[in-house]
Image: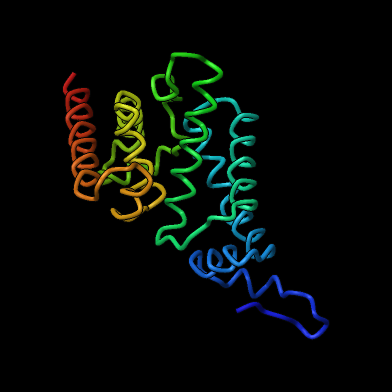
Length: 200
């Protein structure tokens, strides 16, 4: 259903209140205001996510633009359950594709920026707070940067972006159980590395 105000103009305020699923349904129907609302809603989070994969802000912005242009001109959009996960997955694929063409045989994942633009406080949430907060924060960030690209991605999506297991499954192209295992292994590795560093 499209929202109309008395002068015949679409009420953007009403679109702000719509869920992702409602916006997506309107986008399938070629509703431009719904498309613009989805773009505004996800541009900043997608940019932060893109910059976690590469330190080239221009390429990150280009890939986001490419993603939304493809959505806008597509004649084959269909209903999907997890819109946010779909956007993250699509952007990641665009970044991987563009990066492979730029750097040749070296994969983007092998050269990912170690820091996912995660504030220390976000990662420290994984552990109980103690008096040695700053030291734990430093140890945790060091350990986090030693995780594999997939483990860092999983930690970022689950703990920082608060993806559900099903959303993560869509975004990472693995099943929910594998997502759980990936996060559990990453957290266990973080705990071991932090504990090991504290003993030194």
